[in-house]
Amino acid sequence: MCGIFGISGHPEAARMAYFGLYALQHRGQESAGIATFDGKHILNHAAMGLVPDIFDEHTLGQELRGDKAIGHVRYSTAGVSARRNAQPLAVRVRGVEIALAHNGNLTNAAQLRRELEDRGAIFQTNSDSEIFLHLIAHGLAGKTLEEAILNACGRVRGAYSLIILSQGKVMGLRDPHGFHPLAFGKVHRAGPDADAWVFASETCAFDLLEAEYIRDVKPGELLIVDGDDITSLKVPGADETPVRQCIFELVYFARPDSLVFGEDVYRCRKRMGMELAREAPTDAELVMPFPDSGVYAALGFAQEAGVPYEHAYIRNHYVGRTFIQPSQTMRDFGVRVKLNPVRSMIDGHRICMVDDSIVRGTTVRTRVRKLRELGVREAHFRVSCPPVTHPCFYGIDFSSSDELVAANHPLERLPGLLNLDSLHYLSIEGLLRSVSHPDHYCLACFDGRYPVPCGEACGGDCPAQGGDPA
Ligand code: 5GP
Ligand code: MG
Image (cartoon, rainbow, N blue to C red; front, side):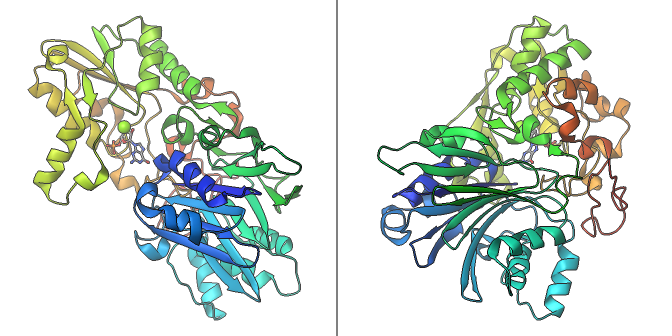
C-alpha cells in the first residue's frame, strides 16, 4: 500500500504536499518523497523514514521550488525496502522530464520488465512502478505525453493509482478496475486564477489543506490538470472493465475520517460492526477494541448488541517507530510501551473483542495470551470482515496463502487454535450490506475470485492463475 498526493497551481506546492503526505502517513511509513516542477525542471527529494523526518525548512522552502508538486508515502509490497525504491520516481527521456507516484501492484511486472530489458532498458529500482516510466518513455517517440501514458496503460495489468508530473501538468490516473482510491479537489484561493487543484489517495488530506473534494478520479480515467484546464481521457478498456475497488480499504486501510470510493469510511466500519452483531451476538459483559484498528466496528457492534463499549487497553501516544529496536527484548518492550491494560476491566470478566481483520493470526494470539494472564474469564472475538483466505496481488500486504491462518485451518478449529471461547467473522453478505455500491468491489482475498490474473506474482500456482473475468 501507499499514499499519493498531487497539487497544481499553488505558490507553496511543496509545503502543501508535505501536509498532504502527513495526512496520508498511515498508508505507508517506510519512505516518503516530493517532486516539484519549477517551470523548467523537476526537483525531487525522497528518503527512508516518516514524513516529518525527511523534509525540513530548507527542502520545503528552497530546494523544492515551483507551484506544482507530487508526493508519495511508501509501504513496500513489491520490491525491497530501500532508498532507491522511494518515490516519486523521476527521469528525463527524449528531453522530457517525468515524475511519478504509484499506489498498487502490477501483475505482469516481471514479464514487462524482461521485455524492456531485452530491448536495452536499464532499471534503477526493483519496484514495479518504474515499468510505467519505461513504457511511457518508449511510447514518447512521435507521440504526445498523454498518448504515451494511455499506451502504457494498455500494456500493464493489475492495480495502479498514479499521479504524474510532466511538462507542467499534474495528472491523476486510476486503472480500469479502480482498485485503489484517488480523489480530486480544489483549494480555493483569493485572486483571479488563484485556485489550486489537488489529488490525494484519501480526502483526509484535503481536509487538512481546506481543499474542497470535487469527485473521485474514475476507474479508467486519466485526469489532466494543465494550469486551469482540466481534461479527462479514458484508459484503453475502461468501458468494458467492471469496477472492482479494494474493499479492504474500507475494512482496514483508509482513515475513518476519509471518503474513499465515495463511501464514508467511518460509517461503513460502524455498519460492519452492526451487521456482525446481528450475525453473531454476544452475552459478554463488555465489548472492546484494541487501539486503533477495530474501534469503529466495535462501536457499531456494541451499539447494535446493546453491550457496554469499553477501552480496556490504553495507548501511549508518544511512541515513535524509532523506539522499536530489532532485538526480541526490545520488541516486547515496544508492544508494552504502546498498549497497557486496565487490569480491573479484564480480571474475572467476560469480554468480547472486536477487530477489523485476522490475517496471520499473530495479533489475536498475542492479545489473548495476555488477557488470559490478566485473568479474563471468557475471551470472545468478532472480526468485522470475512476470513482472509487468499493472497492479494493488487497491493495489500497478504503475501502468500501459507501465512493466512484462515486459509490453513478449518474455521471450526480456529477458536481452539487461537485459545478463544468463541470466534465469528462477518459474512461476505454482511460486509456488502455495509457499503453503498456492493457490486463495485474486489473480494478476492475472501472469495478467491480474482478480477485480474495474478501473472507470475504467485510463483505460478494459485487460483488466480487463470483469473476470473467477473
Ligand atoms: P495478523 O496479526 O492477524 O496478521 O493481522 C491482523 C491485525 O493486523 C489486525 O489487527 C489488523 O488491524 C492489522 N492489519 C490488517 N491488515 C494489515 C495490513 O495490511 N498492514 C498492517 N500493518 N496491519 C494490518
Ligand atoms: Mg489492528
